[in-house]
Image 1: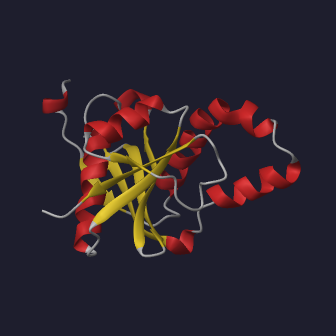
Image 2 (image 1 turned 180 degrees about the vertical axis):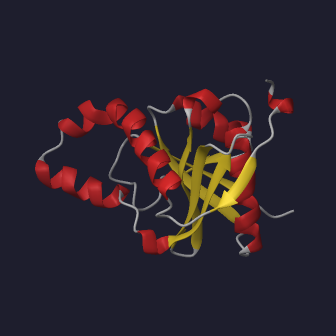
Length: 167
């Protein structure tokens, strides 16, 4: 099936939705090993600070979207978090079997639509230097590198991006 033939359904859900939780767990299982040796080298105090920096308080999440395949299976997840006066993209993940068919683009387009509807003039996001596929996606869809922002400044592997949402 080509990207042009793939039809995705976007669904807004609660942060604690079972499919959303499962997709975030799958993301953690895939991404965490990429950074394990780096985090293992930190002293306990630094590791604790970084864990707090990267934690997501569900109370700050304003939108959670899933992308579902034709059969109804949830294959992708993304969220928007209120971070000060900004909206930040969080936890973008597409299951390996659904990659390369436009699911991540569908998720990001929906987040951009929702952010614009909330009055945001731009979206910001953070990813890591060991996630080249994520960096490539963000650059392909118009996100530009920006300075690393709080709360990610303590992690040297942070890569931050923004996209202007104004017409």
